[in-house]
Image (cartoon, rainbow, N blue to C red; front, side, top):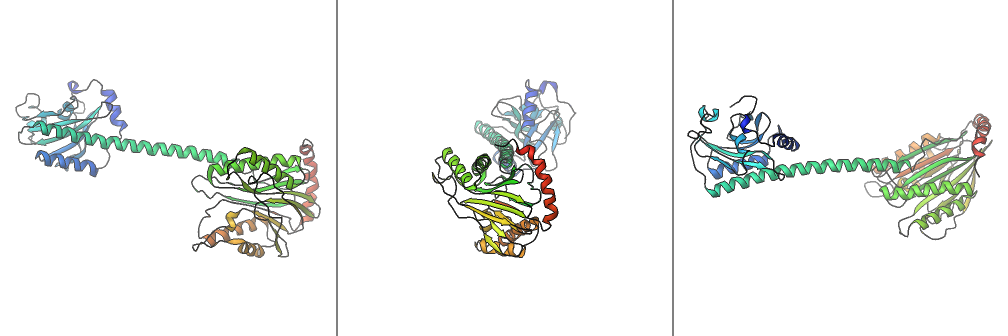
Length: 451
């Protein structure tokens, strides 16, 4: 059941290039057997009382069988025998009641050869845009006639085949579109995420700084938590950690607005409480929505030869943890309402000194609200225990221990956004603060332009 490699010229449709393009567009050629098409050929053979039924696709030089009821060992034949190649020239089913006496088919190898084909009825597989991809055909080795009802049934079955092909094409296109949309969303998320975090890992001369960030949305890779650390003047640094209400891009947009508002306000105000008040005014002026708010803690770090002085204010955020090298743990700052929730806020400033080995730990509630399988929260108490075990340790070790303990508690990835910043005075502060004066000299030029 093979033919020559090129189709008969007289059996080429006038729109052949466009038709072949349509065949390839459906991506059906050489695909595995499919139960839906096999059921259609089985129904066709049973309804017509014939031994063979085939769903064919007419390619450039072959007729490929998507389904072949009664012909288990045949996958394709050459296009030249001409039966299906003739059928795709028609707009209605093409019927050959006795191929052995039909002048158009009598010399066909399938008719004259061992196969002994006598009856052929093929309905074209016509797409919604008018291309005949192939046929649904029924065959027999005995001559027979076809009623008008049977002709209509064959056309209907062919239409069902086309419906299946177009449905699958639409499904593939939908998947591809969804994939493109997801890629676009991921690119947008990456852009949003970049607006929440400093472009480079923050560092402060003469101090240890460790940061961690984990978005709760593993698909979007963007959340509402944010942090930043930047120089204000020669030995004066600013630090912010915050958590916008909600998750995903909307929370990220609120977080980005809050982060940049803090940076702008820090230029004009020495007191962290005034910075937070300014951010509250910005968020209130942007939206009347009840969920357009965030928690935030802002701190100023003044470095000196003995360590650092930290002045901070809190707006609805978990209180930073002071971890003394001796093992003493205490929350610092005064609790207050989140920013963006009320028209006016009155946060209070808190000042604390850090000596050699002391650390201040800023974090978001994704740590303390991590839940285990029993829905119990990790909580402040367990966080204090972790910090107590790592008092005096380097900042990087402390940040890692916090994340590891919360993940172990929740038995897997944390489901809420997490941001952590640990600032610590090194044990060998005398050597490091020798570098501080050099850092101050280097910073004079940069800081001289600040208001």
